[in-house]
Image 1: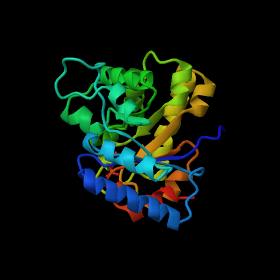
Image 2: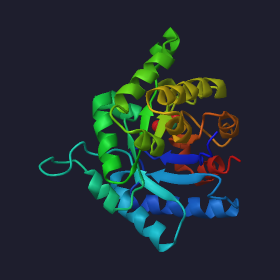
Image 3: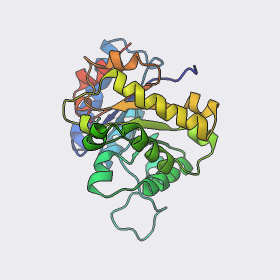
Amino acid sequence: AAARKPLMAGNWKSNLNHQEAVVLVQKLAWTLQDKKHDYEKSEVVVIPPFTDIRSVQTLVDGDHLAIGYGAQNVSEHDGGAYTGEIAASMLAKLGCSYVVVGHSERREYHGESDALVNTKAAKSLAAGMTPIVCVGEGLEVRQSGEHVAYTLAQIDGSLAGFSAEQIASLVVAYEPVWAIGTGEVATPEDAQEVCAAIRARVAETWSADAADSLRILYGGSVKAANIAAIMAKSDVDGALVGGASLQAEEFAGIARFY
Ligand code: PEP
């Protein structure tokens, strides 16, 4: 298998103002240093609200931190008369490396379709950032046993039209909606089942090389106590972490899973 570098991305959602953001990133950096974290063994990324990004950039640059950062959403437009929208070029200018697209909360509360997620991922790539494309089924779909087919349809729609090179460079996050913020973590076997199916689909649609390079994260109630068992699965390359990423000690423990 390819040497895919594990990625631990902390999605803060709509939490923490810019001052609180600076405190958390500082604590995170210190805690990782305390734990003798090797950033080569897992990449650490924070995904704060838009209003925090400039402050995080200043801290990361000023202190030469190895922590990366990104945004939780991006406009499907390049800029212009779109009141309230943040264009990909603006995020790239702030040093964002990643953009989360199609998080289940955006699909559910803002009606984001696979086609829209596809456009947002394309805009992120064009601006030189890596999209973290989120997919995953809700509880009813899981109970019906259709979770693999459902998630693969999201993959087909959300990644349509990308080249094999683009696919190789991006990140997919498999997040079963029933496991997000519920304390209900999927078993490592559940995570592996769907992550392996996504990789197989990518191999079939694009290429074996693209599938080998693509990083696939698991997300859903990940904590320091359960990350090692999840990371032991061969098709899981990291985690997208919500609640636990708001606590420096807990998120550092996740990054230090090895
Ligand atoms: C998420 O929102 O991406 C997520 C995985 O949340 P939590 O870790 O809180 O379940």
